[in-house]
Image 1 (cartoon, rainbow, N blue to C red):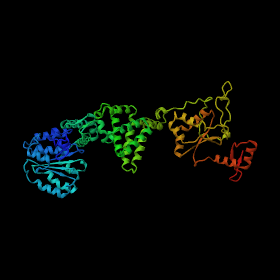
Image 2: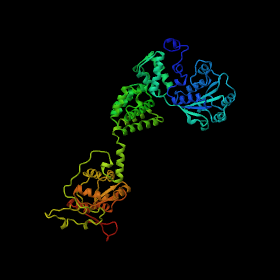
Image 3: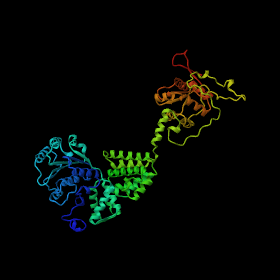
Length: 583
């Protein structure tokens, strides 16, 4: 057996690799392209063979193979036939690439106008021994603009004995004027199930023994390319000596065949940052390429998404039972939002990796972020929070569930609402409750107003609690107060200093200021006047005067020696400008 490869003698002169030896010779042998082969068989049977075809699709899915089978079907001694004999001179010459009537042209190396001119000249001559002249141009998208233009007229009206077959992996680069003159067939990637079945057939035919796990692993690695799968099978057989198990071939199958990828996935889901860093170090020390690891993680997240939608999906059939069980366990720990977030992170990393000078560091940072994915808020909760801020809704409508501060119960009765914009001088306000404000027992129903020029309460300690209680009724207002320091007393009023004019306008919008004032009065059991200012821009004049008075030597002596305090500061209009009178 000098050409089957089943013994050592086959690995010498005359050995034929699996991809060539098992190349389909009829339409029925083609795997995974039934939509193409069925159409071509019907066209041959019905005498409706077109003069030009365009085969598009990924590498290794059968484009050139189907073109050769078509050429055999048109030139076999039994032609036209959908089952060429593969024994006659015409079939053998086509299979060996020596036929004078079937010419395979590499578009990458014969892309100029001169080559196309020679082709146009040869088109005019009749077939030498067959019935049709078939021109197969592979990678046709590599032809130049001038070459395409020179081909147009011949392609539109070729002699009746000529058939053109163009093959390409990049159909978008082919001129529309060329495509419009051809029948286009889009070849698809071959499923892992179909590839595994074909590899099993090859192993059985050649006497090799490979378990199903090994064939499934090869099929996954091939990514839909039958030629790649056959080449990898040949490498595996050379490594294992003709008998291969899944454990035997994992070391030569790269990252996707190793256990480390599964370990990294489990560590990401578990949020184990230390474990992830250790596994990444092990992977990179072992020669794993960051781009390859990124691609493998994208595939892992895709399998997680498929498992979360349909655990019995045919997309998962090619995976081993252990891998499917692992995916099911991981999906239980993640929501749909988490999976989409993982996919966004890793795909962004793939794009950035192409421009990064330190790819390893970028990928490590991305994977560390992925381990924290379960701390990311749900998109639906964020949307509800934003909607709640716009309409001033309750916290249950506007933000994710979180621990809330307990409702504060005031020590005394609630004060009636007062207009926060009250601008009367402090000394003109009522300093005590009116007779009507007392109940029959003589106790005061309303809290006493703040004494002019003094505010004994310290809001710094209760400000966080105040903001938290407001968040339950006015989330948008609370988000603004988070940016502010507690209000400070000046001239008998509380001054809330805001970062910008926009924030100030939002506090004055609607009844926000009135609500804030009410919350302060409820929390402190003290009647207050609340005013606003912009930090560094809109300072109150009274505050400036108070500072001047505080620095006056006489005032300082009174405060320090007699225990006095500044109650009110007014400008003396009878004296020159700049002089102040302090009481």
